[in-house]
Length: 584
Image (cartoon, rainbow, N blue to C red; front, side, top):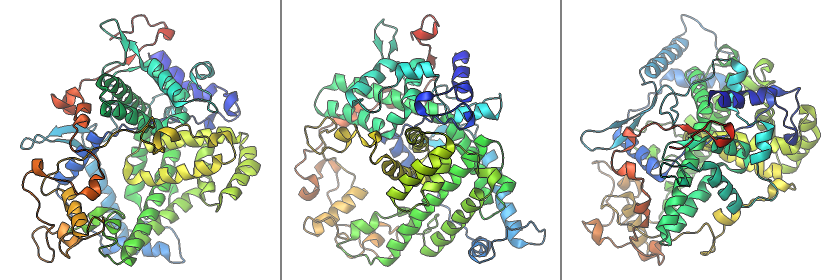
């Protein structure tokens, strides 16, 4: 197993992928990326519960916070120098030390704690990313920076790629799913062949995902989930269970493959975050190529995140809330801004200042040649392309300037961009969802007029025909009396079937987030028991009530022992590797 792992790591250092257009003269730029974090509905719900269970601490924004940003907004962008008698610098250094202290106090890896009173599982953030298979901290290579770059952007040898890769121009979803199922299947204890028990995975499945990384990604995750739900909702429980096992196994593969990338990004956040406002980027963002790549992606993600927050803040402060736009206004931006003592920055002034500072920090990084100029091509293209207005000029730059200068083809660049996006998809939604959305639009513009414009997933993810292969039956649920769903249902009822009212009174959001204070009215009175709850016809839209098939999708171990007691898995050797018995 160690030999095969070493083979994967060295692939990026010495292999020529002729089909992708990479050259031997640029081994450090060979960037075949892969990833994914399994984010199931259950995990997301637990995350929300954990956040609600934590005490909300009011964000402290001292005068020095604004001074640093206002200094950057002035015409004088001279980097801040360290001075013993400078209160702003002393405050910044104190915050750096405090951030380091809090990081050091974390457990080695993220740990699931069980609340004694409620029995709820809460994730305690760790210093290191946990490998979901071994349940231990991710181990970065001790063989040097080049091997860590290979871990960051893993690939497979040409022979394996040739054997396992599907034709991007012609593959179909049923074909991809069947090939993935075959790669994931192993010999089980009962002698049958199937998906191994969670969280174990097949070694061949890792190779398959790496070989087809740009063809899979979040669209395959959604497709497998839809296939499982379609089977369950149609009453085909056995087929649904098999599809669900494949779905979960694929999510585990994505999580395992992306773990080194996420660890490097977490380390980069630890370097960039405490130094926010310091434009001497070379003093804290320099290092080996893999570190600088992670540093840049953190900065770029920060810019995309705060640009989105700035747009949201501008919309919220300019739009006057009314019954007609109630739901629309509520859904804009981070809802935590409505909390009594909001722990986030959300005003237009604050978002403008932070966004500007993030842009200036990224600009300083890009304009420092020793930090930026040797980053992988797809990473640098992301920076160049986002500064070009219009798809046509961007594609012209790609074909006429960038690709010839780098010695790669547009097809290879698009593949590298897709693999980079797949990596970023597996970072936490907040704050990386915004840069993923930016990259998805960029890749769409890059693909116009090429074979990559074809989207075989559209039939499963976009087709609205009820008979489509990605469609499944939905139904309405019972909800607790004080639930947010009932609150919005009362607004539908009070406005005659239109989702836009502010409840039965005029309190609107003030009533929703009124924790004992005055100034807000409560939603319309609803029945006391969830069992008697009747969904408003406008929202039910003719759907049945409480069919119950979704509950069948809960994993058995989560019903009994819970995630906190999950046992480690293993990577099951493949027959091709000549490792002998590969059964569980």
